[in-house]
Image (spheres, rainbow, N blue to C red):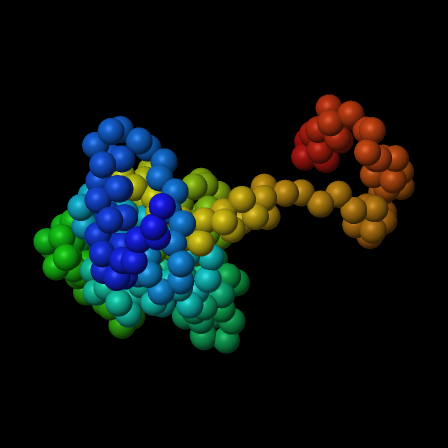
Length: 235
Ligand code: SF4
């Protein structure tokens, strides 16, 4: 069979047509493999506008920035380590702040959305833009937006968990999820869900019993035995 020689724009159009066909056929999970430079973020942006809402995940901040620079309607959110905490006089980053009850914490009614779900969508903060916490302002703008771009770890740790201070209530799970560089998804999930049992840590907390139990784990140890050990540690 002769290899087709398409221009990049033709390839993008073909990929979008395939996505549309798959969606019409009720396919829920679509995997796209395409070379660098083909315009995958452009394809993601087009799919987002079709569906009027999306969450895009990237493994790196630099890719988040690319979406931010290329598409005005997309909003990005970065982790607490990227912002200085006003409560702590800008001496430490926001991961050290105690947000509950903080005067700089903006509430959800402070934000409003205009032209929702369109290319012209804008998320406003009603007032106090300068005064409020920079971490929460950008995070709430991203959460309110129909087109949110997170890095994997921030999305898992803030949008898929209840162990995170926020007044947003139930998290807004958007209609479509696009995982950019999806070959890294398994590793990203693995790093979130993995637990290291180390003898050295047991030694550090002075637990000889725990150190012995960890030492006895080997390739033939029953998984139920390990689960029991974790239960004992948590309870
Ligand atoms: S809301 Fe912002 S300024 Fe206040 S403690 Fe949290 S991170 Fe710091």
